[in-house]
Length: 126
Image (tube, rainbow, N blue to C red):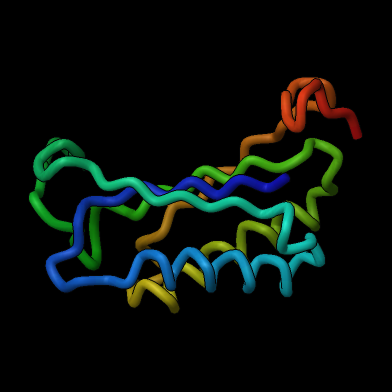
């Protein structure tokens, strides 16, 4: 059930976003043991000038500011060690595949509560 939602400004140099997302799913499955069929990724771009850091907006994704933002939603039943493994996996894979410094990736874990997710026709419990 992990959902990995990525947001960034558009890149100056073209990136193959579909290939990055597919590879990120495979890396995450390998690193965490979560079945590939349960992993979902998305990537959205902010409009140029619609993302400010320290009061400064830019039109394209910089290498060393305006971190690529990632929301990682996964069951709240995961231990702290597993959550750390998930965070590390997303950051490392994204940095490598998108050719951005790992230091410019911000990943936030959002626990999905048992019974707080609706999927496949009803509330999901774990």
